[in-house]
Amino acid sequence: MLSFSVAIPAPYMTSEEYARFTGMTHRTVKDWITQGKIITAPKVKKGETPMVNVIAMTEKASREANQILGHAA
Image 1: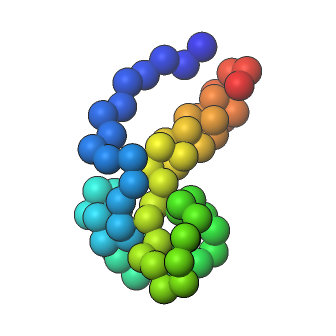
Image 2: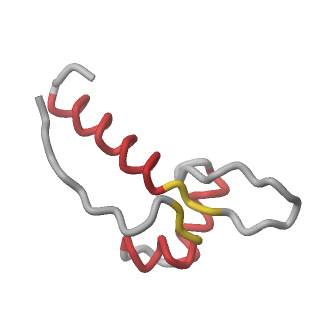
């Protein structure tokens, strides 16, 4: 079983904040959001700023790590 602790500064971040947090360029983050590689919260209103769901991204990374390491999910 894989066990770890991660300090997440906020459950949701703007694409700019997420880019700084991950060290990615803002352009890459925006492209990955468009491609569905980065999970965002559903927009409530048209034109609303997309918010990266950091909790969901952390969970996704955890599942992928378990799969790579051959651990049961």
